[in-house]
Length: 304
Ligand code: G1P
Image 1 (cartoon, rainbow, N blue to C red):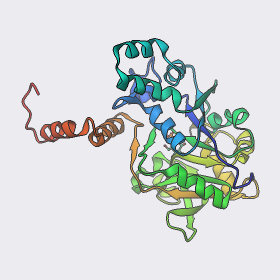
Image 2 (cartoon, protein in one colour):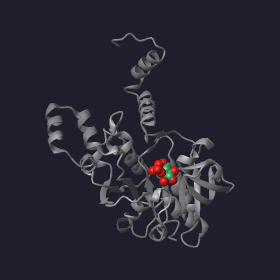
Image 3 (cartoon, rainbow, N blue to C red):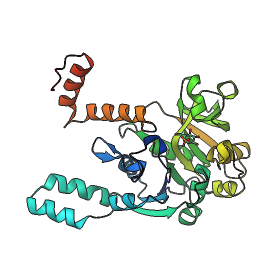
Image 4 (cartoon, protein in one colour):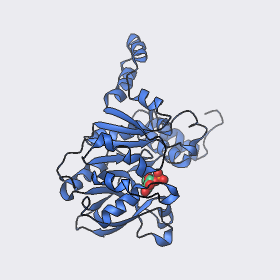
């Protein structure tokens, strides 16, 4: 186990999924680039990482990586056009994404699951603790989850997962953690993990959501982790090994998240996320909320 105090500067973002739930939109565009109001979903995730002090970002991509690379790079032609027009507002928005972080890319090649994607980060991460952020979960910046998770890692060492209490009928959609209290509110010790259990087999209703702070020992464990649920190498299974044997890489703790989370994982959740975020925006919110109220109340004329 690395020293609990080793600073965490690296974030790993798996982005190799095929996005099949959004076809045909994702036929030629990575799902991470789908807009959430006016920014691609992936930008929210990178912003969250940098707000937590993680300025070195590694994206684990697949064959569709070009638009991601372009988004976090400069676009001089567009910048020139906006500058010539004196459109400073849009210019700064275009520059924003290229200045956020140092973004690196590695290809996953054969997509063999989340555990495999994380294992692909090892040459870049080395023997340092690091964070993993999954793009389907957007965490509201007003409820900083990663910062709390890095504090828990500093205190206890080992690895930290983010947990959400879900209705038991939903637990089969997530990794599920068996937990015991630590005496600190919203921090639990993880005693075991199981990937997407049937409701009857779930050790709790604590679901793992897509934020992890990991000890580099996870790489050693992943190397020997056999394919699990769905024939894929599961990060949950590697964490189960670590939780069961803390001598390998320290304990596993959970931070129970009670803040605002936007799930962009499937079409209905994606639409809900956009509506919620648009309603809360200072620039768009007031008009959009008015329109939405009328729409929902059936007060609209056809042409509005
Ligand atoms: C992945 C993980 C799962 C976790 C989920 C959170 O599953 O394997 O343990 O609960 O992310 O979003 P996926 O949703 O990618 O199938």
